[in-house]
Every structure is written in structure tokens, then in C-alpha cells.
Length: 127
Figure 1: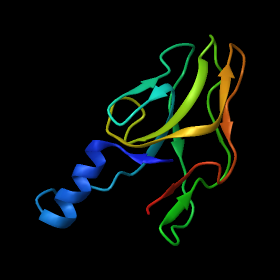
Figure 2: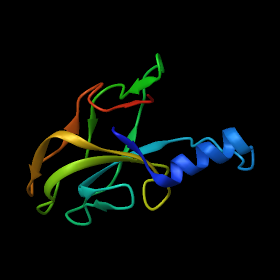
Figure 3: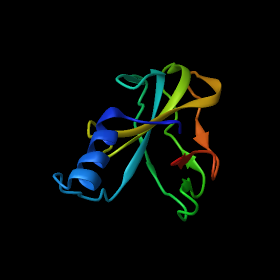
């Protein structure tokens, strides 16, 4: 993934530099797919039985962590369109968005298609 959301950046700064925000770990994070994204917007799929996928992460090392194992989304029951982005969220619906990034190649998801990320296909790196 390529970017923290503005909300995540503010949370980190408040917590670690100002110590004014209580840090509550999230038990499960979820991957979401979008047709477009920016620092302030994430156009998540909203049709065809789409739902976020719970994520399992590997070991954190050298400021980076990647998905552990294959992560398969539910089969589309309608066209989802062209997927450009992936995001990470604190809940299966709504919740806070922490990161987002662009896929290395756009993917068109039509009805009957199943989308998946291979192990280590998504990683979060802090530079």
C-alpha cells in the first residue's frame, strides 16, 4: 500500500508525539477494493454481494508487513467494475480506513468472477 489516510497520520502524531490519543488495537483488519482512491476519498465497491475481506498479516520486519496466505473475496454477483485500489479498514463495514494503495495492474471484476490476493501480494511499509 502506498499511503496512510489523513486520519491515520493524525492518530499516529497525536499518540506518539503529543500522547493525547488513546491507542486501541484493532482485533481484525479488513481489505477493501475501490474503483478510485485518494487521501480523502475511497470509492469502494457497493454492488454484487461485495464485502470486505478479513486480513491476516505476517511478521513485521524492517518496517514492513505483508499478507500471510491467500485472501479470496466473495464471488461477484454483479459487475464490480475496474478495481484500481485496495484499502485497509478497522471493520467489515464502516469503521476507520488506515491505508490505501494502487494495484500494480487494474482488474475488471464481472459477475461470477472471484478476486484474490496471493500471499504477500499486499504489504504495508513505513519509510
